Image 1: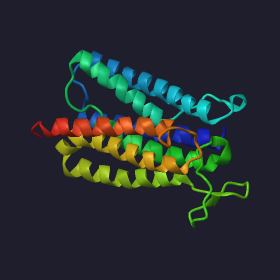
Image 2: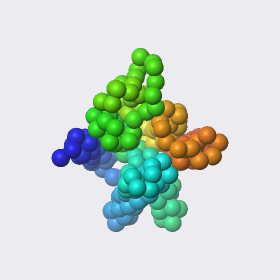
Image 3: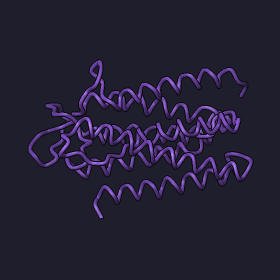
Image 4: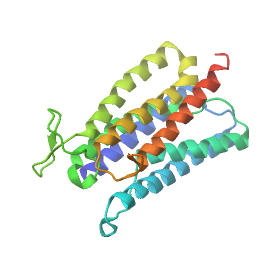
Length: 232
């Protein structure tokens, strides 16, 4: 078992436990049991497809054809999950945020998963560009690079503290806003870190991931405005 796979399983396990525990305490995310199971299935399908498709698009564009491998991306998983769930909610006429109780597990999962990326070194292809700053890290080839994996992990760890605070302080606010806050923060910080990665750009100096980040930022801001028009 590679170290990355170990951290993947660790993040999945802790994430699943947190999601189950919080959902159990709330009793249910969606009242109808059949619809709830369909909802969970849609989340999984969208996340898996998004992770593979968007991750592979990046590796296809950034690596030589001979070096191409099937990729996977947490950003892609979030994008895929959001798109599939929003379509599902439209079809089933479900209103309001249904993603709040996934946020703690997503935040912890990303924080732990990025540690796996970091410890996997160069083979994971998630390292940053060369830097002379004090933050530079040598992954074994003598070149000091931005440890962008740790930057993202640190942001998620800090946000987890905030999530816990809001969860216990104001449950109504948590349920209504926390998912969109997570999307906005994750997409914004990821957009920034992408400037420190060696991925190929496609338009306007931005890479594939950054365009998806912009899409998530627009999505989060739109729903912030929408839910602000509803009474807490």
